[in-house]
Length: 81
Image 1: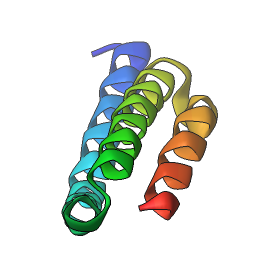
Image 2: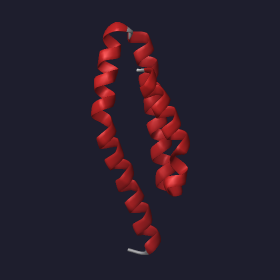
Image 3: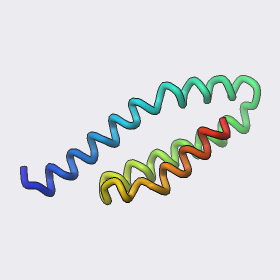
Image 4: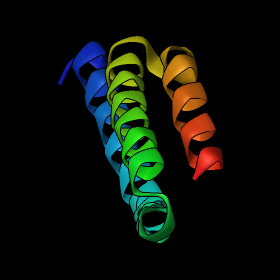
């Protein structure tokens, strides 16, 4: 692999590992919030999905600096849950 290929592959691996670490806590909170506030939980769940997509695209293409917007959206949605 060239350095650029290795760099992109490493960033993609970091995105995946971050998602694996983030998913259990997110799903537990989403389930708990969905029992009492289903509409709000669904809206925040959609925001989490959008935030994770932006995070993964930004980190994979731009490195650690590209993840800021996705992290902000995801963390705000997680705080709302």
